[in-house]
Image (cartoon, helix red, strand yellow):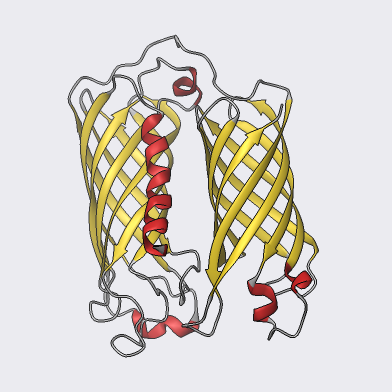
Length: 360
């Protein structure tokens, strides 16, 4: 059941990205071969890096055409729905990764067919070799077959009449959000070369016929968010614990590309007392945190990068500072879905699954 829930939640981030573009688009087919390696971000991973990692992506791309205002704001980005395959460089211990993801390429500029920008994607991946005490004890990084995937990259692209070629340096991160240990995570730096062919010539409308959706400019809004999650703690093979979070936050939309956010997290994490050997009352599972965030508003999708600090943290299981990365997607005018990763620096704590309601 936990595996099914994780699959639905990871795939749940793909569907709203696709929903952003429910109109006729110029469709393209893209192929991207990639080569890279397993990044050893912990000394205990040294035995895993045997060979180069390689693989690639087969994508269906949608080229924005300028009909909506956000197309112009972000220099006509490309929406990417793809399947990917990676050999992880250690066939016996790590195996291969196969998955689905959705993403967007944001050009910083577009001039004479050339662009440089960021590519970001989220998805679900199946890793063929997970940790097993008997069959695969050397895999100390991934304890589940199904994992979520986040990919961040920098791309240089040349656009032609009906096609593009691109060179990209990226980092793919595979993790289950500590719902099953071990979960050190798999980080894969890649170099990729892409070719995309579109069915129609690439053209742009000079002026948008649809305006902004979402928060009004230069005004505050206030929301409440309810989050639920699960996680495990060491030693491996132990129990699974629940996490509940009530967040109240305010947002201010500075301009079409910038929303600033500040919030208060009231957290009940039932793993904290167990992590500290259980010699405390359940009230020690409660934490209170303050955070500030940068939000990138993309039509009906908000990408979030946040950093915060606990003001109530009795047992301090992972340090005073925490971070969030992920997004919210609009379901109705006031109701938003939430999928973010909470971490303490480079260590994932848990996925945050929730709903947010905007009061004003």
